[in-house]
Image (tube, rainbow, N blue to C red):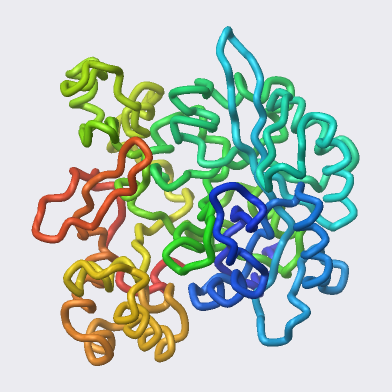
Length: 434
């Protein structure tokens, strides 16, 4: 008997923050998030910061549940965006004679369950101090505590490769999922790529074969060059929390249709380097130099590409079977317009005018970046922007890799970092992925 057809296809960004998180824009409010998430083309967004009591009160004031589905909508009828309760926490503990600081995303099916999570976790840290609280507990204890009263609570490790605060982080991480989550490992079924890695990098670890690979923005501001910069397209039979979790848990490409990935070179920790010395180097170069900075003689901050190289048991050319989730590299439209316009600031009036012209004409940023024909783009904003959008679709925009907390940059007129041929094929329409 064949499975019922999917009736919901949407882009989800399940990991963002509210203004109650450190180093987060005061504009991270529900109206601002809703406005820019819709411009981006998102259909579902995580609320962020589910453990923060004050943010929880605001969420209750501004959101309401849709027909007992665990999905929330705004009480403001202007917005069509839907929400799901989620938030990030940091567990701090000692293991293997090493200090571990691991970030996790928790998702909950209701405000009531989120309240219970707050009650459980406040014993391990000050949940009012930060939207992403520091909790003195192991990763396994977090999973056990958060899922002890509801099997619908869903947890996945966040941005799993960044040097600090991640599952595989070179500074405080582990070498396997099992080592991190111990006897609770069976409850972890998905991992988040983070800005500095993408699916091909994660395919190199056979340890991750059994996990769904998902992407989210970890946005700290609502602007379109932050929110939705990474996202996951999901196919659902109905828009409900339980169906969303099931779709991720099945780990099948029919359910997780596509992930949108920032070119990993654009991430803040892709290459190895020293920000203070303004020095960066590829994984191969770092190995050759024994991870020592030639300028100051200290150890370099190990980049994600080098950390992947350390743990990988497969070559860079490895591709899973045909059922693996598809992905596409994209850069934010604001960044593309700015680069094509002579290096203007993404937030400048000129960039916003061209952005609004494109999105106003064609619907959403994702549609502009993935689907609109080049001629139609050029008619609206000129050949230079249209050409760079087309190059972004086929991952042909050179990027100077980010390192040691510094974002990568579009480098027009320069040679970009070497990329494997498995990164992505040249597709020119969003429909080609479905």
